[in-house]
Length: 379
Image (cartoon, rainbow, N blue to C red; front, side, top):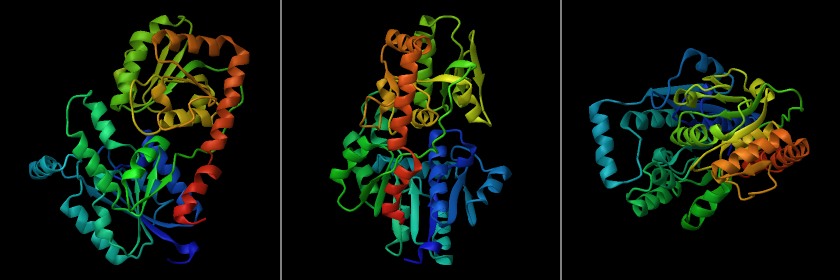
């Protein structure tokens, strides 16, 4: 490996993460920030049209972090869709690597020497075979895709055993696997004989906001993914009617497209200043009814010192289920009562704020999370 001051990495992430429209975008951004702090020279490979687009503003922001940014068009034509369909008939886990992408990766690796190839999501694991053994390969898992597929289908039958086997084989192609979830590390690790697992949750800066007058009693921040939509539908249909009419609620993010307007509910599709939104809010809610991985929205709330009222699904990915700044409530009645107590009982609110700050600092501050990453990338 080259001198630590000039270590280099080629990072693949399929989306424009500067859009910051999802928790995964924020996680990748913070990970890239870590690599730059460790003096890495970085190149990025991404896609146009997989879930979003690269615009001029994103390229401008990218120049702060990357020497080169290679963006290919996600193939949408009938021949490509047919190829993916045929592959899915033989392998339940989707393989999204396409020929033009393989050519681009090989050309980039031939042109430049990298110490690391870092791939996000198991759908792109075949890129590790292209890299060979000339560099250290790292897969960022993000989620257990077998479990996610099961939940998306609402428990309907599918080839769970075959997909789990495919997912294990995909992860085991790499030298290291970064896992955002303590629970998913425990699930995968016994089955993988080659890859070394590293617990790598998201790291936010510690930015505990002081107490003060707030504009909103409740805040939810979320993208328009399936789990957020189902969770907010349950909250608005079952919990909202139980809350006092004077409680004000702010909902931020693309999930607002699926929330109907109601009294005392403010919808903000996109915020350029999330810190101000958190400063204006007293409590964060996470009314999810299912999900995988670690809930970035919960960790972000704790980083601001905001207590969270959540269902048990909001604690997915964390082994410490109590004394963490979260009030856990799975029924609509308990959820409403948890919200009201945090609003009305100042002593309880301050105690939960203190829990939130202490738990975050011990698990998710950069000095803690980056120490784990240093085991892979050097300190």
